[in-house]
Length: 178
Image (cartoon, rainbow, N blue to C red):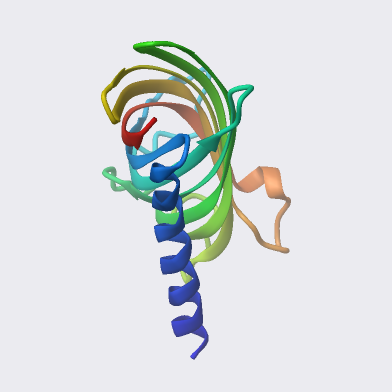
């Protein structure tokens, strides 16, 4: 019963971001790849992220919205798999057809495996700060982004920061909206 309730809430949160596509804002798909940089990364996770997102934009260019992401590692060790839902906050600057934005994505979810994650999985937190640049087509926005990403399993047995995994991330976003 509890698993069914969690699945229903996760599904509802995954669909909500697409509702912003009809307002002033956008909704669409995102894909990202974690990049190993020994000076900026805590581990070589070689993970990719796929998901959906949506946001509204006010008259001053402030973004607010939500997202749902799936994370999967291609490497054998330390492997990581999981998913997150959360909120988006940011600021965008537009000079048609160009778009620039700074975004913070923060959320909660679960990790099934990885460095510092118990074998049965764990509640986890996610954060990503990115700079995004793209261009607008009629009704569509195509953009690329780069930034830093962090995720950490939440457990009472160790401190929060000993479980943190962080690294640079790059990706693309395709959205529909204005």
